[in-house]
Structures are given as C-alpha cells and as structure tokens.
Amino acid sequence: MAGVLEGLKVVELVGLGPAPFAAMMLADHGAQVLRVHPLRPRPGIPSVDTPADVLARGRDSIAVDLKHPAGRGLILDVLKNADAFLEGFRPGVTERLGLGPGDCLQRNPRLVYGRMTGWGQDGPLAARAGHDLNYISLSGVLGGIGPSERPVVPLNLLGDFGGGGMLMAFGLLAAVLSARTTGKGQVVDTAMSDGVAILSAMIHGFRAADSWQPGRERNLLDGGAYFYGTYRCADGGFIAVGAIEPQFHALLLQGLGLDPADFDQMDKSRWPEYRQRLAQIVASKPRDHWADLFAKTDACVTPVLDWDEAADHPHNRARQTFVHVAGVTQPAPAPRFDGTPAPQPRPPLLPHASPVEALGAWGVPADRVRDLEASSVLGCWKL
Image (cartoon, rainbow, N blue to C red; front, side, top):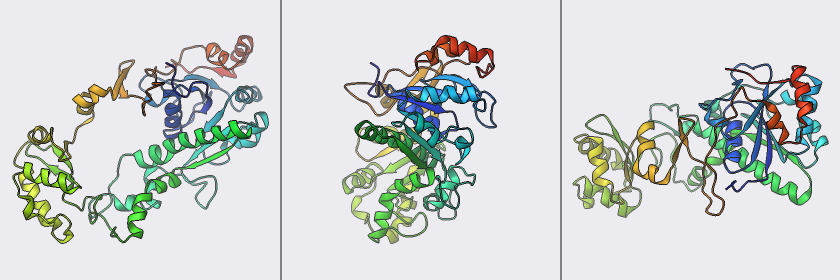
C-alpha cells in the first residue's frame, strides 16, 4: 500500500519543526516529498537527516547550494514536476534566494506555495523572531493555561504543530485540490499565531455565551472543575480525571467511595471544597491502584503516563499507536484509512547516500546530477 496521498509531489525546503512536521504528515500517507537542505548549514537547522530525526522520516534528502545559479535552477526545474513547495523561513528569505512565489509559480503556474511562519507574511510582527510560547501568548491561549497564580509553559504542541504544521498540511491539500480544478496555484500563508487562534474557537464560543470566566482554574476545562483535572497519588504519580457528564461523574465518585448525592456538580462555589475531598482520597493510594480500579469503567479516569509507559500501554500496543523505525520509537502515521492504509514509515535518506536516485525520481538526468556534484553545487553532508 502506498497511502492515500500517492501521486502527490512536494518539495520541502528544510527548516525547523512545524514545516518538517507538515511534510512528514504528507509523506506518511504516500506523498513523494523531497527534502532540500542548504549546502551551507544554517544555525539551528540540521544539516543531515538521521533516524533520530523523526520529523524527517519517509523522505529523500539532498543538499544544494541555493545561492549558486545552478543550484537555484535545479530547484526551479524540479518544481516543474511538483504539486507543492513548502518553506518555513521569515518573509523575504526565499525571495532573496530567487525561490519566492513569483519565481516558482512562473515556472509552474499550478504550484501550491506553502509558507510557514510564526506571525504571517504581513502585519507589524511579520519580520520579528518568535517561538511557540510567543505565538500562543499573543493569541490569548497561554493566558488560559496553568494554575491561577501564573500561566505555565506547555509543550510546543499548540503553536508549532497544531496551529502550524497541521494547519499547513490542511492548507496545502486544500490548495492542491483547488489547483487541480482551476489549473491555478496559489500561496498558502500559514501563521502559527493564526493557527493557534483558530484552535481556540470553542473557547470563544463559551465566552460569547457567558459560560467562560476570565483567568485560570475558574472554568470547566482549565483545571477549575474538580472533575476535570489531575490528582497526585500516594506514590507521587498522577491520575487524569475527565468525568464531565453526570453519569461519568457518578461513577467517579462511587469508585472513590463517595456518595454522588453529596455533590452538586455544577455549583462552582463548592468546586475547591470538592477538589480537596477528592485529593485526600486519591493521595491515599498509588497511581496504579486507581488506574486498575477505573480501568473497566466509564468514569474517565486514566493514569498519567511517561513517554516509555505510553508506548507500552496495552491500548497503544493493540492499535500500534507507536512504531519502531530504525531502532527509534515514534508515533505511527495518523489518521487511519481502511482502504489505503499508510505504509510503515521508513527512516530518512541516510546522509551518505547519493542524490542521483533521489533526483532521478523527479526527472533529473543522472549526468546532470553528477555534473552538479562535481561543481560542488550539489552534495551530501556526512556525520
């Protein structure tokens, strides 16, 4: 099986996290993706792809001197056969390389040109540096995460990968569908600040309905509700409780030896009191005691696992949620398609491999590849 995106051809100008993640998502499901490294390494950008670089899996990789006319010409020629081009640099960088949207769409009018940035292609902050934490802070999302005393630093999943990489993968596919209908490509401007904002659409709906209070730990889903949060156990582990619906809430309390009739679930004024009662009970037993007790109920109680435990959990093993690729444990492709399941991911093209085969799949003759190698326009970084 080649995957649901078999036939889609994408060129990826290698950058940091979110853009490679979008390319990984596409490659996981059968897209042919060519990773283009700069021949001269840039700070913070990996110069080679190794099995440990999970975000680089499933793609061939070459290194090109993009500042040399022959290197730039090679990429423009490759793009003639591509459906999409993906880059993740600050506005103006690819234009200075001669690989901006105007250059590329002139060569291939059907091309979809994906641009991944933190702040977008325009606006007062467009040229400014930033990271996930900055993007989610200006979106308002960070202000709602953490205890009441202060926001906490979450993993960089919201801005970088949810609001960034995942949104870029969606945008590229939507624009490719449009191009196949209209014959016209376009630029997809994916800003992580925009992406994390749209992830918060439901919370804005709650606010409009006056069902969301300002601050943290004051609402249903921000740790304010005693029936939606985490609790420390006797052994220092934690359980996660998500018993929102009344029937699940009743099962939670029964499992803890409490009478549901003693709890008014929607009386927010008593949430701190109820939380304290639950915390005292949960703290009396180790994590796995509670995990086993609630394992076969709908109380919505689960253990908080570490990375190794997650990969070994029976449910994740049964669904093969994690796979092993070249000795590296990593998430399996998702979502799942019953008619065209994603193939097992393969590791990135090793750094010492020749670009002849990689570029041959894009219609570049072997003699041209060898000439570019001989002139040091094309090469491979070695570990």
